[in-house]
Amino acid sequence: MKLQILVFGIFTDIFKANKVNLELPKPLNVGQLRAFIIKNYPQTEALNFAIAVDEAYADDEQIIKNHQTIALIPPTSGG
Amino acid sequence: MNHKISIKISDKKLNLQSCYKFVKDDACGGIALFVGTVRNESYKKEVTALNFSSYKPMALKELTTIAHRALTDFDILKIAIHHAQGDLKVGDIPVIIAVSAAHREAAFKACQFAIDTLKQTVPIFKKEHFIDGEVWVNAHP
Image: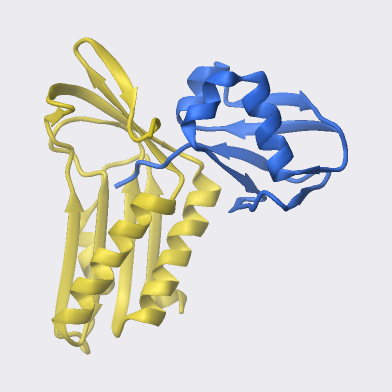
């Protein structure tokens, strides 16, 4: 499954982009995506990041489907 | 409920008066305002510039959720939450929260709830620039 993932905050420095394209096995849940990212980009492990599916925070058990909007959300710092 | 909520993420300077006007109501006995301002020091170093970016569609949803929860959980009349993005300098206003209520206690509590929750959940990201470098705020535990 080809996924285009939106990235924000410190991730834009790590990936040097606002989006990243990944080829991932299917079926895939959010926890597996997190593990894949940490394995392939070890500098992300310490970041304690969240993953959003279709603009909402997702649990690790949530299954990712084709055409959903996936985003990596580092710790927030608004306000 | 939409006439009770004003949510905005703006590339332009925030307008305190428009937030105040939005929440002002003949039934309210008071208005609580929280105005965030960019301070000149962080990590004991002088801040030279600062940038806010957001995952805007999701941030607007999360801000709306906060406003609805504030209206449900506290006895308030109206709430405005406006956040700036882009480049800001010392003294600029990154966030305004305005809450009107019949009585002050609910207004204060809802205002505190809104800013505390915003900081925890809304996907907005601050990068601080110093003379000798830059840092994504809160990025590392």
